[in-house]
Image 1 (cartoon, rainbow, N blue to C red):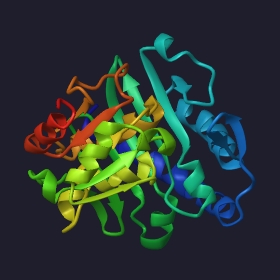
Image 2: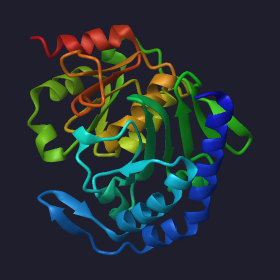
Image 3: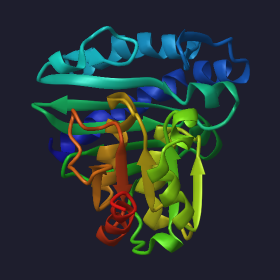
Length: 273
């Protein structure tokens, strides 16, 4: 994807989100009740409305299928070109008035070609809540002055690192590996959202106490793929499985996002003991 196409997609998607901002915030201020779709999997009206909007808008932008958790489409039979969407990442956080976002990615011939993340509360407060990336074209944040090129952290020492943990909280607390890493890191947080966490990673090098690494547990493609591209295009060293294997469309559940090679080696060593 060339720079011109990236900017066209990003501009159209940003305007789409801005056109829906008032409705998104209305649901945020007075959230409707959630219902449990499956054990531990909660869905609300915002998820359903955003899904309808995405299903109408994205195929008109790039004509192809749309896949998400709410769409009955087997992941292993996905087409060569498709959108993957998370209509509302952080449903629990949305209902609790915390961190949530909307995210999407475009896959073409098995390649993660484009992704975007929108954080409505940041956009409302500081006009800088839209992030996007394209393969080989960098990662960007829409700010009041224009566009800012994102840069991942250069932290090399786990003992000085800021670590984020993402995944089902009950299961995550029982996993030895991420807990060992959390104990080694200087700072750690969990329970945000993949959308929010990915943006903190991608701008880790732009902040004095930026985020340096993330460990994800049982993420779904719509959780992790948008953030993978944003992080890689921001110069993050690598995203791997917990065993160090390369991420792929089939291997994007239990992941390590490490800003530098040294950090990745230190994290992986804690899973080899």
